[in-house]
Image (cartoon, rainbow, N blue to C red):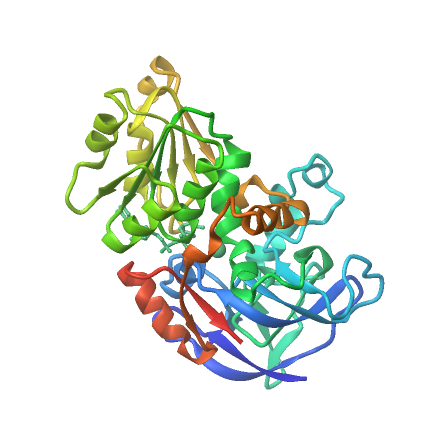
Amino acid sequence: MHMKGAVFNGPGTPLQIAELSVSGPQPGEVMVRMTASGVCHSDYHVVLGEWAAQTPLVLGHEGAGIVVEVGDGVTDVNVGDSVALSWTPSCRRCLYCVSGRPQLCTSAVQNAYRNVLPDGTTRLSRGGDPVYSYLSVGSFAEYAVVPESGAIKIADDVSPAIAALVGCAVTTGVGAAMNTVPVAPGSTVAVIGAGGVGLSAIMGARLQSPATIIAVDLSEEKLELARRAGATHTINARETDVVGAIKEISGGDGVEYAFEAIGRAGTIEQAYAALAPGGTAVVVGQVPSGVKISIDPMAMSGRELTLTGSNYGSSRPSVDFNRILGLHSSGALDLELLVGDRIPLADINEAFTAMGSGATGRTVIEF
Ligand code: APR
Ligand code: ZN
């Protein structure tokens, strides 16, 4: 079968809309017709050359669609089901999977980072040569073949844009504040970076009724979205000393929880420096390869600070996607506010330009 997909050929070159061949699902795999895909900063890291990836590669890992074909042995989904895609298609057998931490499944992470399916191959090709699928998803294309555990059945009435965002930004951000480090009621929280992931962390934190949620960004438009998402205070990092302002707002000591949702050394260090004694900083953003941070171990022991990481919101996609969608349909989460421009696949390169400027909400490709 043939389809259109946006192919990354190497850093510094725009994605190219190309005609690709896609072969049917092998045992345990599912073919999905994409209905929507969000454009996430983790795609942009690859475009910028901040993370190495083999090419040619169909980017996109925040996708939703309809199952059009299932391979032998697939039982979780049927043809016609609506699904949101997970970029940690867990093996369901390893220590991490059986202990309820599928986001740490080592084989899923290895396959996803090599942009291949569990058997080490890809179902996509161009002129007979393999084309890889980013994070075992590859949602910037009309079709994707994914492992069964990467296709999570959702209700048919969920809008494609919302379903797509639940596939990455929402689950990553909401989960960081609900699963990785559950925010305590009445506490103080800072979220540095108010993109799709940071806004989701604000919403996830708010569900647990902290007293204060301080949002930090460089863009006034993002800070306005942050207030709508539940931030009680905002700081424009272009104009203000971020750590000083967080301490001032939180009564002098700092915050009990600080979430970094950008992926930069300097802002991770800010999150840590903004903690009150006993506080916890959570690294949600993902840095360019090789970036190191500098922290003061004396403060860590003397003030009992915790620095921790969160992958995919420490979530279990097979249950958490639908829990989050339930919170959206009940009105507890307003995921629509995350959606910025809706564009056709052909405009993908402009979406990256907009992301670089930081001025818009999350761009969603609709197929
Ligand atoms: N200080 C404050 N805010 C900043 C700074 C800074 N120094 N630099 C960037 N920002 C803001 C941007 O203005 C933007 O609103 O951080 C936000 C990042 O949002 P997106 O680019 O939309 O990124 P997102 O998709 O939310 O991902 C954030 O999480 O999963 C990872 O790889 C992903 O590292 C990325 C991070
Ligand atoms: Zn993502």
